[in-house]
Structures are given as C-alpha cells and as structure tokens.
Length: 269
Length: 257
Image (cartoon, each protein chain N blue to C red):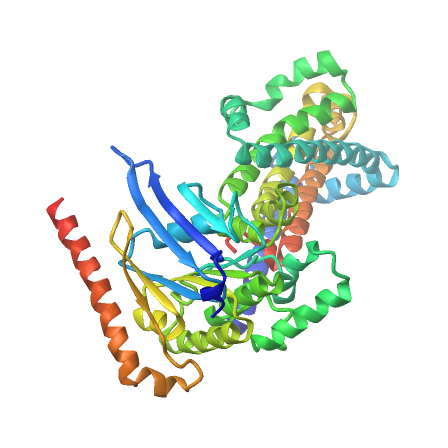
C-alpha cells in the first residue's frame, strides 16, 4: 500500500518507442509505451506473440536503447544494473559453471567474505530445492531445475526489481504451475517489484497485481486490469473461484482481440 | 554402453590389424628383394637403425629441436590469435581492418614465405618459429573469432545485470564461453605446427628432424630416413591423442554445449 503514499514509482516507463532496421523500411516494435510500477507491485505484460513485449523488458533491463525514458527510483537508466535482476526464458545459465558457481557468480563482486557468499548460496539452493545438485552442471539439469537456478542466481544479488521474460514459457504445464507457486511464495516473502512478460493469461492473473495488455506490433498498452485476489488461499481454490475466472476471461478476451487484429492486419498485407 | 565399449575395442583391433598388415607386407617385400634396400629397407632394419639413432642421442636431439620450434610457434600463434580473434569479434573497426588480410593470407602456402623469413631471421630457430606461428595463427584466429562472434547474448546480458564490468566480461564470460571452440581450433593448429616445422627444416636446413631427414637422404642412408619419418608419424599421432584426451577430460570443453 506504499504505492498510495510514495509519489515516486519504482519503475517509470515514459514514451518508450523502439524501431528495428527492416528489409525495406524500419520495423516499429514499440510505440509510445507508458507504464508506472509502484514499489512492491507485480505487473505482467501480456499480448500476442511478436508484439514487442520482450523488447520492452530488454529496454527496461538496459540491454537495448530506445526512444523515450526509463526511470528507476526517479533516475533515468543508462544500461544494465544490479538493481534490476533478470530471468530469461532459457539458456541463460553459464554452462561452464556448476549450479553453485552460477548462483555465486553475481556475489563475487559485492565485497562479501567467501563464507558469507557460501551462506547465501546454500540458503538459495535450499529455497529452490536443489540440495544435492550443487555440483551439477546446467546440461545435467531438467528445464525446471535450470529455471530454479536462474531465479536463485538473480535473487543472490538481492535486486530491488525482478524482470522476468517468459520465465516459465519453455516448461511443461505441470512444472510451470509448480514454478509459479514458488515465484508467488518468493514474491510474498520479499515483496520485490516485478515486471513479468508472459503470453499465458492464467499465469498473469494468478501472479500479478496488475496486467497490461499490449497490442500487436507496434506494441502499445491498450488495456489494463487490476487484480485484487487473495494470494494466501491454495491454488485449487483460487483458480476455480468465480472472481478468478471472471477477471481471467476479461483479460483473455482483451488479448484475443489483439491477436485477431494482428491476424487480420497480416492477412491484409 | 557395453556395445559402445565392444565397438571401440573392435575399432582398435581393426586399426592394429591394418597397421600390422602394412608392416608385414613391407617386411616381406623388402626381404624378398622386390626392391633395392636403398629404396625400401626392411622394417626390422629401420627399427634397428631407429634404436641406434636414439641410443647415440641424435634423434632425441633433433626431435627436441623440432618440438621446441613447433611449441614456441604454436604458443606465439595462440597468444596473438586468441586475443585478436576476440577483439575482432567485439570491435567492428578491427574486424574491417583484419578481415581482408586474413582472407588473403589464410589460404596461401605458408612455406612459400620461408625464403623471406630466412633472409630476415636467419636459418636457425627464429625463422622456423615465426613461420610456424604464421601458419598456425590463422586457424586459431578464425576459430576464436567464430566462437566469440556466436556468443549467446543472454549470457552477456545476464552478466551485465549481475554486475560484471566490460573488462571482467572478457575473462568471466567471453573467454570461457568461447573456450570449447578455441580449444578445437588449437587441436587443428597443433598438426599444422608440426608439419610446418618439419617442412621448413627440410627446405631450409638449420637442424631438427626435417634437416637430418634431408641430409640422410642425400647420403643414401635410407633406414635413417624411414626411422625419422616413422618418428614424425608417431609424434603427430601421440600429440593429437593427448589433445583429444584433454578435451574428453573436460566435458564442458566439448563444442556444442
């Protein structure tokens, strides 16, 4: 509830537009996107595939330059920073490092003593339930385990903001639900500010405080939904409740409109 | 797994039979007098000669000279090729500058430069080492450049958001990520270093395996010639085997991770 009293949003995306050089003319990926995210808020961006939602996350991460501004704590960002931890869809773990060394990677710069670093790594390995796998390499892990390690590696640096780029998109349906529950638990404990990109409407409704719907390319925010659901009740109860399904259907229809509009636009070309 | 082991044994056995057959035919042909001993000394004769040039220290001395030149040249090529390959992958200007030079020099016969190298650097080790480096730098440079150009951008982005500086990125991400393919390029360059050393010594003299081989040929000491050739074959095989074993000992080093 700090959002109501704190005038400075944690993240402010102001008029962000992004074009890529195309074959004939530049392709516009994002057009004038404005989003404000309060501290501790969990915001998801959903939209048809190829609408530029990942591009927006990369701009906020500081990996891509774009027109417009991104502010964190009221200051314009100029590139990546440890205040914004990122979890990518897949292939982000360093394959030449073991699970433990992947998690330790970001800690080796922070001026912590080695036993303190080891303590943090041990705790996180416990949190993600990978005790006994510390010395394995990423190629020896399942997709779900890899994403757990990727999340732990990001959490190790204790960033104030988590940027999640379809973090569970490459996982099977069952593993995805387990991971969503873990993410929800971690968020409830730490109350970090989260910006998540997803194409899974149910996932967005289950996890977020707010959902922004993005249009097909050029991506702009066309709809916004506030979600006020009780996160402390068990998943089965929540997901089968009328309140959950009402909002889920609203979001789903909004996304579907955008996907259909994209289809028609493509057919017209 | 059992089948794999069995087929590996089978392969080793087949290789052994193949080599033994060639040696047996060789020995039989020489003993039957099908060719003059000057052209084809018997294998056992070559073996005896090999033993005596080993015992008098001449072959080990030549081998040491040649291996030193090959190793020094390879080391020099690595210390130029790896940093330059990474720099070219990370810097467009360097890429523009060096790409045409590499395209021109890579397919050229390096041994053709030996006369110039001898003129500039003399007939002993320095000209040989530099020629070996010249021959080896291209496969290493091209392999490193390809590896460092194809890095997963998500690794680089992750590293930056985990607080890695531009300088640290080089040692913590770029080098380890490119290492499997750099090592593969080194494995390609190793035989090139041996071939170049032996050839340069044969053409330019100045001691070493190649020089003694040519010298012995001039005096019709055919068993010595064959003993040296067999030693060259064995050294190449052994060194490549060692490189393969190193690669296998570190699974993370295998390309395609």
